[in-house]
Image 1 (tube, rainbow, N blue to C red):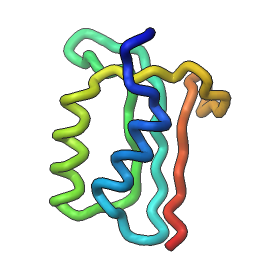
Image 2: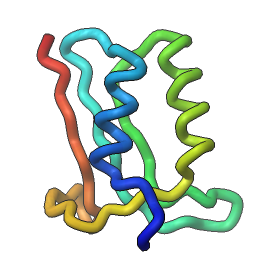
Image 3: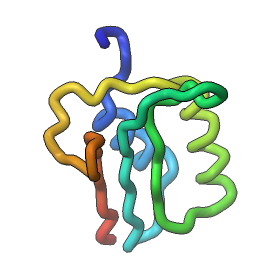
Length: 87
């Protein structure tokens, strides 16, 4: 999957861009693309501002597929990158 942005780097960059409030959790989870859903990932997160949600949507469109190579944390059957904003 060369040429794809690494999942951990994507999440770290996104967190810096949106500046989430303290006590916010993020889980970027690998998924298999499906008809009508070309992304290979889903981002779960705590409540965010409308502006932050717009930034996430914009960045998502730039990177519909990410590389999860080297990720050893799992959520069920899928690899996951997690972050906790402690404040």
